[in-house]
Length: 171
Image (cartoon, rainbow, N blue to C red; front, top):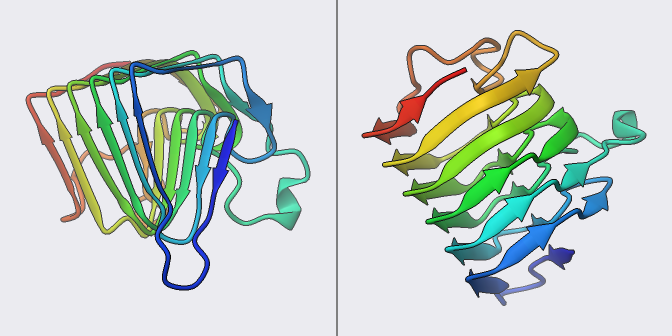
């Protein structure tokens, strides 16, 4: 649905309030793909049944994010619902490579991905999740909730860049 990138010194910014991204499909990120330091913010927005197919993924190192894929930059989710999103590779709902995720009052449910059914974080500099729910996830790997390549298993002890406050993580 949306592809953003930054060229030179200009920062691409996207702000969506009361939006709906539904039934989108692409190789890399079914709904929104932010690259090279983009700043993306969603408030009271729903992502439903979006798919990153990951076809020919061996030719691409960062393919994933059924709803959102960020390469660097900042992703802010406030009052967001992600339901039924899927990825053929990394991050059923969200994939972030070297950026930040701020998530408040949001939910990720019924999500699936081969690695990281909800969120896949690689080189994530900051991740703060507050008052959010991540549940009903499906993964073909042992990584059912969150994956960090330095910890290739379900995250039970969190790296310093991750924090969860008043959250509910269920399977």
